[in-house]
Image (cartoon, rainbow, N blue to C red):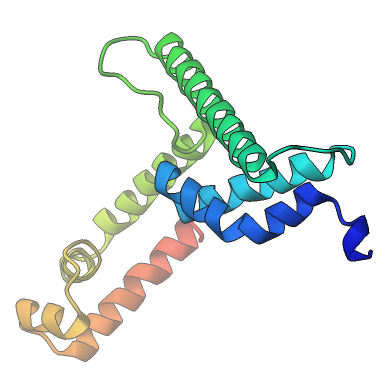
Length: 172
């Protein structure tokens, strides 16, 4: 494209792109949002037919401001819809919508935990104690050994016994 054939609006955009980003960064308080908005300005003006715009710079800033306001309105509408949905899907005040695991996974996890507890309760007392100290209290093997007044090797054997029993009865 020759200089005389260039779209004056696109040329103005390319010249003022950094100014546009700075301007909208200050208003949106976000580098990412400002860059997105300035890109949207380009998409909007590149779709326009070539025409004579008296003040291309003012047109770019006005287009960006309109896009910014449209985006803010859309975010507010989305927030209101979200709040309405949440209020319609809670059964009482202060109770939120649970966004956790699906119910079948929770039931399965509880069943597995119950089976693990059952296995551990059937083990000899020193093995149970080593499991409790290491897995539940978070002690290292050396710390568990010191707390139980046994060797570290004994704690490792206790843990292997416990884990073998859990794997045999509950699986992974």
